[in-house]
Image (cartoon, rainbow, N blue to C red):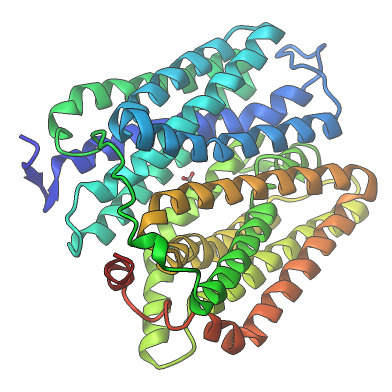
Length: 449
Ligand code: GLN
């Protein structure tokens, strides 16, 4: 059974696809209404917690940071004790419990629920991603397309969630929304339990092999030191990027609620619906953007990972120019609201940036680090993206005193200057990679072995 294939891929891939699709459905569903629930007045028909925006954005930052930071202990848990398959199972159970606890209208339930979700995502997210890779032998060309398929699953979940959970939570009752996210996670867990028969060969616990000592002989060479510098730089890029992008669920969500005219064709679009735009654009543009970069490289143009990341940061920055446009319109319009199309455009540019940074950074980091750190690097990548989430929270908090226009302009200037510096110094920085970026990651893996 584990060797059965469907459409050219092991059936296990589809089990992981649907499990992660539902896990992301629950995460992004919850995230779409999280800040709206915290800041909704206690006197409204659909009562929230009545928090001020600064406190809500502070918690939003901590929460979304911790979710990803826990990927590091989550990866260790799998490597040292459980194996990835059981760690995903445990994570799934914790997530079901967490989301269902959030369905209770009690303050204790709220805090307990988010702790379970943090632990659950930490155990599930990095390990399910590693399992996708584990379904293929080294060198199997299908591995890359498997990750693409898997990424589509992530975004189908992330697209549907704000529409369904968002609608139920924002329009009917917040807690029904959280409960619906829990039902999604439960469906994911059922798929995963049912699909175990297709996953017998992957994600099993392998006791760590003792270091034979041969690796210890190799001091950090000057090449490795140089590569370490670029690695740290790429982590900074990841933080800057997610720090800008992840304002979506926080500041931009609140902005859309309070300062955007959301009436379209006579229908008021619920605020949380806009949270579906990222995933929608990823599904729409994933292939064209990848195609663009391949064509670009074939023309012999500069196409190193650092260059793409620099360009991606600049494009993301320009998304904030559109938001600044919205802030200017808000100030001059009679009802104090700006057109919804600013948001459509801003999210579009953020996603073009994402597609030039997120997959590129992940593969770049794995190319620079030796094989024995490969899983650790996957965890480290999620961890730094978590730090980016916290930065996004801080930026949102700052907007509450400095004003949105100042903050949107500030993020624009910062991202564009940072990206331009990368592009300007790309040749120098590339030297520090000592060719790691030009070769196939599998070759680097063999080298490291
Ligand atoms: N959108 C991706 C996901 O949810 C990215 C997560 C990240 O790297 N922070 O899986």
